[in-house]
Length: 412
Image 1 (spheres, rainbow, N blue to C red):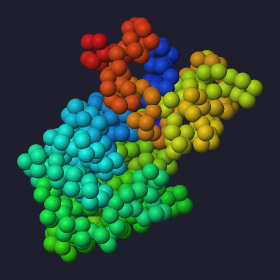
Image 2 (tube, rainbow, N blue to C red):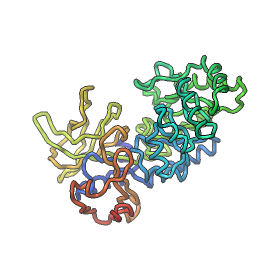
Image 3 (spheres, rainbow, N blue to C red):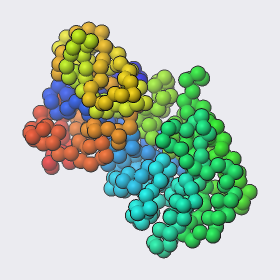
Image 4 (cartoon, rainbow, N blue to C red):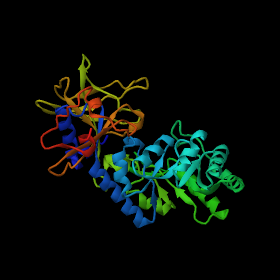
C-alpha cells in the first residue's frame, strides 16, 4: 500500500532494512521505524495544530507503543491518547503525559485507580455505569475527573467490535445525570471514526459520525457548557487539520500520520508527513504455487499489496496475495516478477497495528547522515528486547559498514 510512496520519499529506510537484514542483524518479521522522520512528522503536525488553535493527543498502538518513538513525538506533542490501561503505562514510561484514555477500549473498573493516578486530561465513557465507575475512582483519589461522552457512531461508519456510546438524543439527560455524580465533570464529546478516506473521491471526507459528535456538542452548549471539548479523531494529519478546525474540532488524535501511513499518504506524495516505517521479512520456502515469506505482522486491514525482494541478481518486484478470513499469520504468499531464493530479504510497507502482532520493532536513526544508528529492538508492546533474544542465543550483532549501535544496545 505504501511501498511506492516510501520508495519515492524515503528510499533510505528501505535500503537500511535490506542492509540490516543482509548482515543478519534484523530478523524477518520486524518493522523498522525511522526515528528522525517520525520526529519531523510530529513537529509538522504540532506546528499546524498551533496555527489552528487545536490540541493534539497522539496515538502509538499502531507502531507498537514504542518508547523511543513516544519520547520523540512527545517533544512536539506532549500528550497522548491511550486506548487502554496497558498503553497508558507504556506511554508514561516513554515520557508522554496522558490526554484521552478509554476512547477505543473502556478502562476496566479495577484498573481505574491506576489510570487516574497518571492524571489523564480526560477519560472517555460509553455508558452510565462506566461514568459512575470513573466518578467513584476519582472520589477515592480525592479529585474530579473530566470525562468525554463517547457518541455512538453512525452505523455505516462503525468498525465491527467498536460499537458503543451515547446517542446524541441522550446527551442532555446524561449531562444532567453526571452533574449529580461525585468525582466527574463532563468536558466534551468524541466519536470514531470522524474522518475516513473516500476511495471514490480520492480524499479524506467527514463521516456521519462526525455530524453526530458536532450535534452532541451543540447540546452541551445549550446546557451551559460554553467551550466543550470536541474531539474528532481518525485520519488526523497536517492535510486534514484545517478542515477539522473548520468543522468545529478542538482536539484531534494523529496516529498513522506520525509515520506518514494514512490512506491519503498512499496516493499523495505531496503531504507534509513522510513515510517512515517498513516491514522486513524474507523468503521462507517455495512450492509449486510459488514462494512464501515469513509472517507475523499482517492483519485483516493491512492492505499489503506489493513487495521488493532483494536477490543476488538485483531487486525483484512482487505482488502480495490476499488471504481469506481463515488465514493464520504464519506465512504470506507473494508473486515475484523473477526468480527469488530462500533467505532473500523482502520489504513491504502497509497499514499496521503492531500491538496485535508478534513482530519485533527495530528503531533506526541517522539515515540521511553518514552515521546511521540501530537504536534498539522492542517487542510489539514497546518493551526492550535484548540483542541475544533477537539473535536467538547469540549476542553478536554484525552491523553493516558505517552503522553503530545506539546507547541502549551498546550497554546490553
